[in-house]
Amino acid sequence: MNKAEYGIKKVLISEQEIKDKISEMGALISKEYDGKKLLMVSVLKGAFVFMADLMRAVTIPCEIDFMCVSSYQNSTVSSGTVKITKDLNLDVKDYHVLIVEDILDSGNTLSSVIKLLNHRNPKSLKVVTFLDKPDRRTTSVNVDYTCFTIPDEFAIGYGLDYAEKYRNIPYIGVLDPSAIEE
Image (cartoon, rainbow, N blue to C red; front, side, top):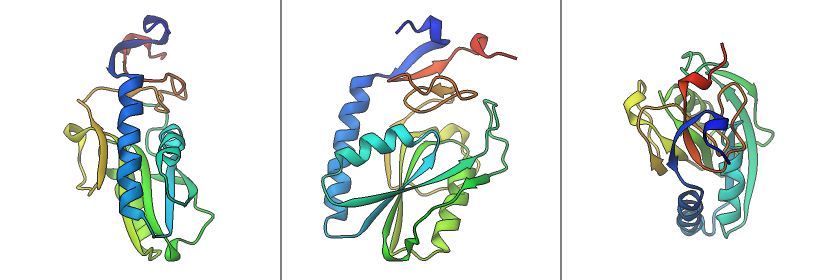
């Protein structure tokens, strides 16, 4: 895949690094939740690729559900307004819930999801994020598992997008600002 054709300035995390980290994370989660009724909740759309790979790396029984939450609206900067466009189908009160997030940026979106799910009284609630961008944090958020910490650059690939493009790239790259269509 030609990076320049896809508007990628540089590769931050390789496909192999991703595979290795997800295997490690799956083993850790499997150990922690062994014997517990685990519900993995993916925050769509960005986390669906991470969720698919992570749930295959988890070796204990688990269930999955999805929420669709947005705060970007085709921009490279979070609007600060969180909109839930698809809620869960399952009642979380009988589950140990693990929120599966693609990227922790400002913290606003994840903070809203955590508050919402905590009000539904799960047995426990933890968070795993694929990427953490601490330089952008505006809201304090407790994350239990982090795969990678990245600098304050606009990451794309492995499910992350800009204006619904680039999700199919199998690694994490940095979007070249010249690739943004006005």
